[in-house]
Length: 68
Image 1 (tube, rainbow, N blue to C red):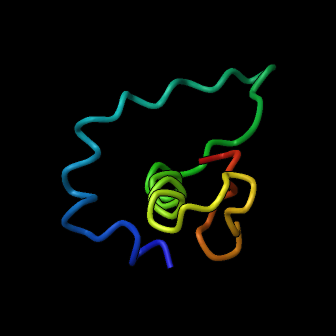
Image 2 (cartoon, helix red, strand yellow; image 1 turned 180 degrees about the vertical axis):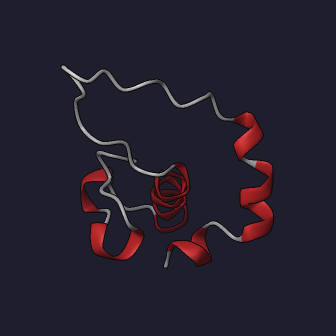
Image 3 (cartoon, rainbow, N blue to C red; image 1 turned 45 degrees about the horizontal axis):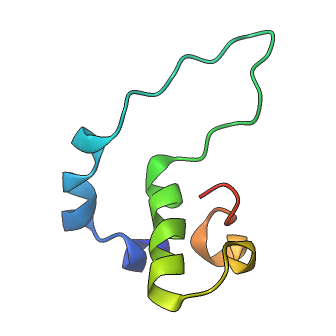
């Protein structure tokens, strides 16, 4: 579904606006990063549907509301 939320023409404009991906530290790597397009799809889902962040369906969007 995230392809419907973030069309290709929108996604072409977004990457130049994003900050570079920080380097992961080997010893304290933390949680794996979600791809930027999936995180944007989560944001767009909340904006379009008006649901609470905790109600974002991870199976449909590709990431949880907490991650987005």
